[in-house]
Length: 496
Image (cartoon, rainbow, N blue to C red; front, side):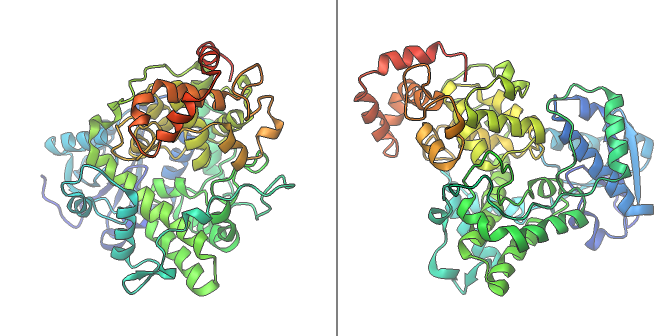
């Protein structure tokens, strides 16, 4: 390592742009920011994702004023050589970036690598917690996080004497309503920086997916604070009850839309957690809603981050179900108009139009479809990482390979998350406008999810029969009198 002094500049990646990185003990340091065109061209990203990243970098440059130097080069090495001085850098958020930083250290371009400050729990502490575990339960980790950070606790006990209010957070969408009726989420006001970003992206002529559109997500600490405040004050009370529900005319429902600023590093997770806890303790926000929101951030998000590193770089190649179907063109091109099933069409349109859908659309619509049809897990992980505006490299492997596709043999989740149309009908208002019938598994109007569920169960009979959480599915399949024609129908299905 090169000698580090008080005048050593700090190089920030595009997902490290908050005050936790350039404030505090490092508030005196010069900051280097880099736009590398090679990184923009490396994969087929959503157009709006590239806009968000460039907007975040350029807004950080403006906000830091004379402290910041923004270089636009072909690649990062060119930028560091052009900058001409060794830099400090935080641990990056992917294996590939970590290897690259280590290489730069060997070349003398990086003076030292600091621990990641944009998560609540340090990586070293998780390593100690994980120990020799071979099976992981998020609930164990979540409870430890609550104790460690003293969140929603009364002494040694959880507030309300319950750790988890998940059972109260599974409400179906309200009937006779087109929307949930909550105030709209915070939407930042675009400025001259966004206008320039849009023009520059047009000029680059990159191979992207999705459509261009207004910037919907916060990319600065100030915007993130406004988005958090709006959610806590106006939208949090209904978040818990309807966090799993889907409505065709209400894409945001009562969700926080904070995943982008969290993953850009402009909002620290503990700031969001503490704001939600204050809403409960000081303003009487419903405990079930507050706990559900905190569980997503202090529990699930932190858990996914740490398991990404713990499971290792090869985890993305796990394929315990042995599936190899390539992603169809209508999927990779986000061609929602080619889809007939209303729930799947709505979810894909959300990805096309915004690069974002909420977690149930990701897991129980998109992920459920992919699981039933046997799409290759690594390809699917890549798609989620590039087509979603919050899909940074660390986010998706455990979410897709482990949770959504059960491709890791159960290391992360105790059962596959497969369902038929009945679940979708219960949790959405989509089925009433669909030409498929969620109750039918055979015929022209048979629901692809209902029929596809039995195709999945049949293909994975031995695995499911050996799991006490899924044994009943195999027993139910064995009682179907029309199983063979259903399997034949689904083997030939080309329209979803």
